[in-house]
Image 1 (cartoon, helix red, strand yellow):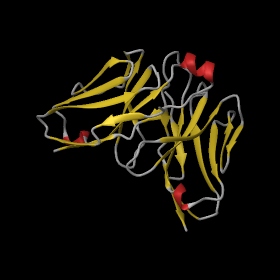
Image 2: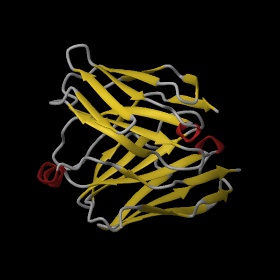
Image 3: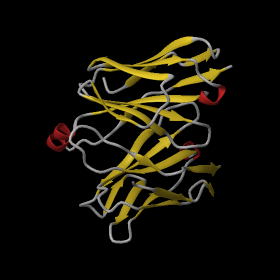
Length: 114
Length: 119
């Protein structure tokens, strides 16, 4: 089955710096890669996603890149703000006729200091 | 309405109790999920319902019993739980893949979770 590894487990940056979180996956059939942000006491919230037919996607300060050959994908956050502090999970999924089975990475705790 | 709601927010129960968790969505999604999340860990899939039928049971102990009475509602019935079952229980939903392909929407929407403590 699919296995997703995520690094680093914790990341501390100063406000305004960039943050990069990296994930690798094992199943070449995976074709959808979302990133979730989870704040304390809340459920995960999708912040950006990418499909396997796209190499890069950007949404304001957040970008995701995908290297299918190497089975790597990364989250890039620029101009970090204290409100970006949370746990971030990457995930991988492959197409199914009726549902979406996500396999999550182990999570990265991001701390942005003012 | 683009949200998944879960009740209760917090639940404390003894090992002999029977309780139920409830999840609801009104986005027309036909796939619904239960996850278990321990502290500092990622969500762990328990069950998947697709068109109100159980599609995946990830070898979950029988003391957890899911139910999908209609396309908007998902329940998780709890009986004879153990202290190690204490966790955050998350519900999620997605459009079916056919609809995803038509709309280009992939997002799996999560609820806020129920914090369960088993004494």
